[in-house]
Length: 156
Image 1 (cartoon, rainbow, N blue to C red):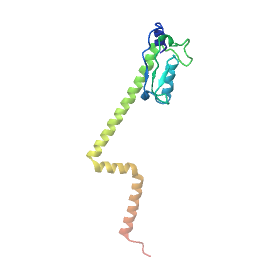
Image 2: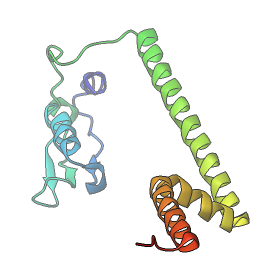
Image 3: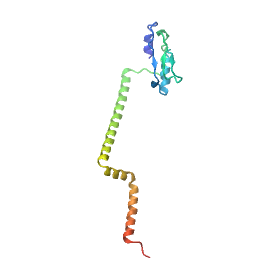
């Protein structure tokens, strides 16, 4: 932005095109950062709300813009190749995450298809995976009851 402001200052009598800030572009800290970015270059806004989320810049000439005299300490200049490497690494990271999500989606879709095609098997498998311990306990109790029923109650 400083480069643009410095460039525009070459024509001090030029009108600066109006800048419109939209509320949907102002989320949380982003709103504060966005508004501060413009204000630090001398651009003043008439805000449409008390939340400072939407507004229009006041008319101004390029001479009213204030470029930085020195770069702020919290900013650094990256060489273009370092920037591109950083961006490529992020793209690769996102592509891998996308592939993972696509595979997970395909797996869920296949599982849903199997459940629809074979509802009884799906139900039994689901019950087994979720309640296998309880099923073993119930099966054991049923076996004991069956043995008790077959052999009768002990005689005194």
